Image (cartoon, rainbow, N blue to C red):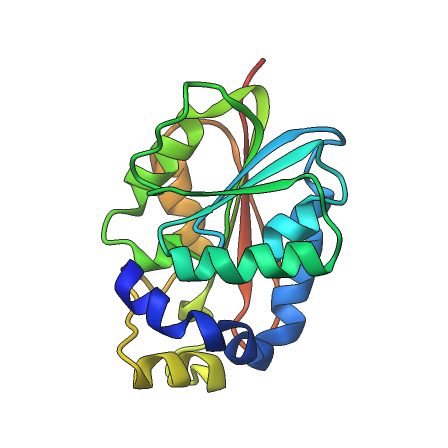
Length: 204
């Protein structure tokens, strides 16, 4: 996957503007869910919009992605905004090197629909979530828009993109509930391509 994302890293933010309202609202809502002062891990962060939003409340944010080109763009944006509490590292969302319970809040935005087995990523993200911590999973709901994908997805498809799952709010909730990790809340952010924010809280 990183090869494709390396190729499109330079235009990622431009393409994302076609779904600007939903993306901005989802990042802002995810940031609201970050406990003040939290140690935050953001996986599959792309160019870092969710990491940068989370930095306003977090004690520290580790912004990670498999694509080094994406992380380069994220680092530039953090430096431009003067954010000193964001660091960067390459990570595979399905095989994290971090110890169990390392982070107070764990975030993985708009990646689960890309994975053949998203449950593997969710379990791994849950593993590194601390007791009393929160797992926040914003995910595109392509199933809500049918074939009317909008400019963003059409452009990506033109350069070789495909996704594995077209979630609706219901099927996304069913996926998360099937893992039997914790009670699941899914909040829908409307937009050209809506997003569903799944939230799971780990018992203290």
